[in-house]
Length: 106
Image (cartoon, rainbow, N blue to C red):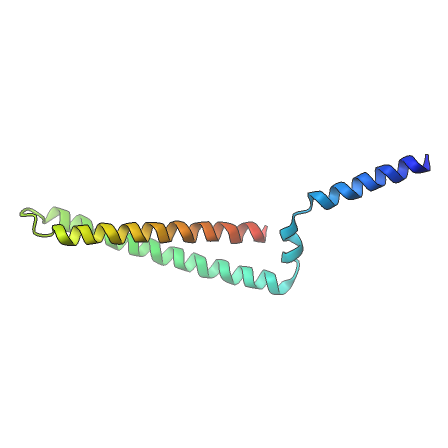
């Protein structure tokens, strides 16, 4: 009977160790938690700035498309398309980094 209780206790303790999220141990440290919060705030600000920049580029692109009767703005439109592509990839990278930080904070 005593052996059975010991085995059950070992299984429960072992299971709880394997189920514990390793990030929780790191976040319990206040310095790590503060660093992660600061990183999240920085990434959120960067995401906001990239989204505003993207909106500006899209607005400029729409204005040029409306006034491009003689194809006089084609070079600028190509340049804007490249800028939008770079902006899109930067935004995706920031969003993935932000997701990783938020997962670490959970």
